[in-house]
Length: 127
Image (cartoon, rainbow, N blue to C red):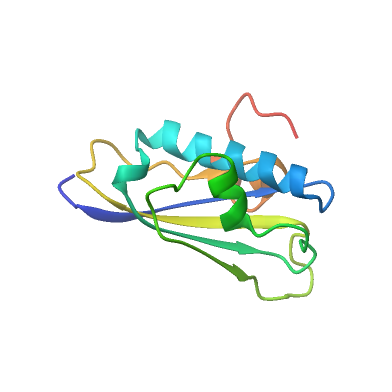
């Protein structure tokens, strides 16, 4: 495991489009990604968010900064493609990490987004 640059993926959902819910969901997602992978802001080269078009009250990148993550990292947020049947009220993230891998990267899918990648669902997570 000698690669220095790699990507971590994750996603979450909110029940309602509100700044407080987006802040909470993004903070929870970033906390889990950092914890599960043993990384800090200084390890992150770039963080890219996408959010579905039904989330309009808060930009996920702004929510990331609001929650205390990404303070040293360039952040960007885009609207996700509007695909029929896609998961509503969803926020996805890709974190480009630049440090020596010490273990296999762990992807994090929380809340309703755990349906996107069931193989990453935590055993003790309730929907």
